[in-house]
Length: 497
Image (cartoon, rainbow, N blue to C red; front, top):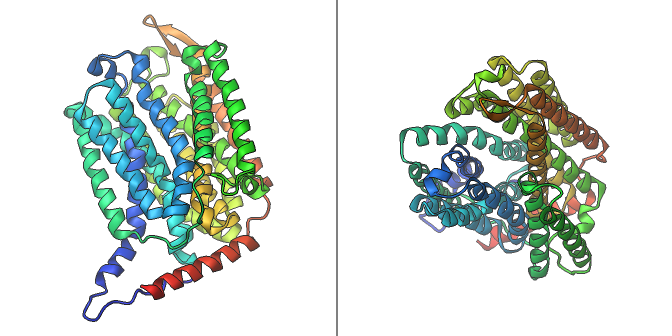
């Protein structure tokens, strides 16, 4: 893909503003990804106090996390498809706007019902990264695209690492609503910056939006993820959980049948079933599982009371600072990921990242008592996650036509989300099964944490094997033809301007 042709300016009009907007495209999109991750993370330090602050039960409060998970999983592929059809910048701005509206609602209310609805609105921001990656593919020349996509993929980990200590500090020294006023201001700034600095891509896939497919996917995913996220609380063998899983299987089977028979489906399943695309989605699911266990277990382990014999009794602020080196590492290693992908292909980068994640868990198993070893192991896992997460969208970009990049990357992010949800349930089950009373309160044992590390490490090795089984990842004929179409569409748009 060549450099975009300059837009002709009327006589006497300065070209400084368009040039400035072009230079700001990558920083603005990356800041949107970081803000999205921060917005999802900031509620975590609040969870222990929210029952008291909202006069609600702990089970009800947990829906502030569950609602975001469910809405994000449903809306990511839907908004990705909408971006391919109606304009990626337009849909990206709408997603950031919904996230900001949700933050304002949280800032204005202490009612748990309003807070849950607000958090569901914020789930729309999960589509920010796949939409941004698709914009980068359309707008950047090949020599800049790899590093920009790698940075965009890393924003999830960077924002999560920044969000936890930031939220803890605000909560410790100010009213908890202040945190949401701050994120509201940042969200409004992000909406304005995106609209001003990001071009609207001329690459579109025309057709009628698949409403029936959207409803079917939403119903199936809600049943699946609700069962996974609530299984530990409601009981894995309870009628409600079994009913949800059976409903998920039935609805998603019908949805699959409907998608194969629709002229313009929400998700192109024929594309998904190609080995290069399908195996990339499987690797995304497994990597999401392996990565998420690191954040879950590290936060609990370092906050465990010293009476356990292994816990450090750290505050939530100190816990966030322990995870901060991992976020910095993700920022620093994203250019390296792009260089490895350019030299060896993203398949190799993905396999290497999964292997590094497994090595990080080996460090965690070797020593989870000393703080510096805990930080080292968590940082190694974060490094591997950077390599893997940066390679996944590049694999997708090389395997799908340009007009389907947002929806295809949306499905890939969805698979990562499902992997994280399953990881959360699996880690919780292991820790609950291996716990002992400390001061009359059941606390996970060190053996339980080590089993969780081992489980995540094995999953990472499986992800490495899946990555190596992905067929050669050079650009396909379809992708090259799509790239030519993209250049033609851009040239026509520039000439018209």
